[in-house]
Image (tube, rainbow, N blue to C red; front, side, top):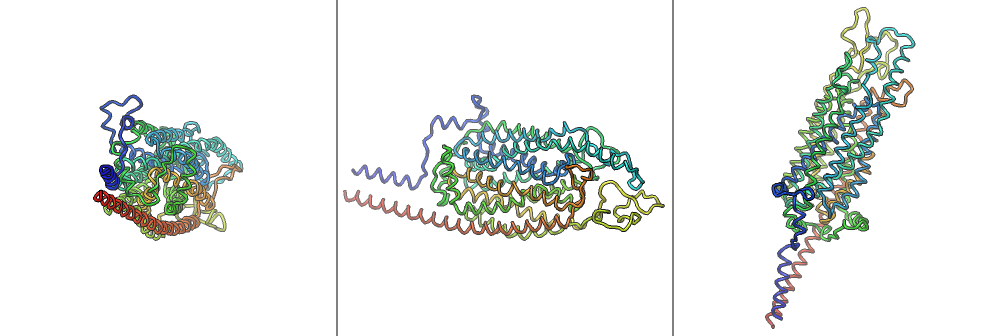
Length: 622
């Protein structure tokens, strides 16, 4: 009897002081081997380490962001001009990506919770690479690009033309427009593929990395990964800015007189997508070789369970049965801190998904820049601000060893600064006088504004016209770019603490599904409609369309900058204030939940000590 009680004492003490360890087995050892199927030689096992996993995840995230957030956004105006698309139509393309990401991400993130996350990531990367190549295919079938101005065989708009001249121009325009617009469904299919595959990186990928590193280092790794992926769009914009200076039909030469400063110029946008596709396909190969769990997984899981809050203490291990998915959803929907974090992210992604996709076009339009110049400008600014903000917040969390409560507190503090910085978006360049569009003159003999006068004007004639848009110096550009840099830095600093707080307020097996479920809500409610709405705003602000030839396909040539500014700034300021309120409220509820968890643990330890004391008294009595 004395031996029995002593054994019980030892058992209680073991349960109190050491985490529960799963017994190792041959099956578990086999799962930790790096390789493809039966091919897993010993010399490959040097890759079976968290550093290599992090490296390939970083590479995948980097090149995927170069493609999805960099190339796709930088080539919006090029696609619109080449395939005669409206801004609402190009906005619908990225919305298609959000639809597939929501559907596939919902299912994949649920099953990936307890299954092989590396395989999910590898297949996703393969699909993204193929989708990128499909996106570039219309270029090879649409035929050579023919700018309508150059194809008309005239050089002086001010010379009298016969009545049949307009019909000749329209005929040439209709021949070029009709076959180009029919490739729109191919872009939709490609975006569906890229969205379905790339979404897995943000829910499954984050969870896969988090569970294979020490919990106190997770925030720093996430910050580095977010920084690397944040640099991706910047590099994508910079590369696009260089490639867009190459003529679209290269190696053919552009028509005489057409330069990349001309609004009718279209760069070789398709090179971006072909190269990205093959690179991402190559990255999917090593991702497939990683095991389900890397060495050290069990140790890190035990530590995470002890660090979790009260909402994360009960782990129902969802993910083995499709019937449990509704229980898993119910558990998330009753988690108030989690829902408020998602609500705050929803507000943020209205701006990110909507205006972020059209950022190059916004700068190109509001400050009268060439497409390649706007792309390079956005690239350099995002490179300096995006990575800096993400890395800074990760280092802060690492230095102060922030818990989930501290992470969400940091988020709402940053959000206040973000709402203030958004006011710089009100800076813009005024509308450029355009004769016959937004600049009226009483008769045809009145001279055009000085900015539109050709340097080769004949002395006997006081006016002339030039092809394309006039160029204008805009002193408001520098203040806007400074404000944009500050705004993007603050905005990116919220990424890491938000994800950390989200994964710390749910159970262990729910983390992948929690991130995935949040992405589904964000994509369906924010990322899906936002680009379409912003594209519609652009179309609404259009002053001059090129649809004078009775064709349904049209591209806007001149926008009203004042209207665009009101749309952008009004919506941005509203959503930033709303997100700050959501994050602050989440912090309040999260703090209460964390305090309750700590109190429960103190009670459990006190009860255990009391039981041990009673056991010692019984032993002494016996």
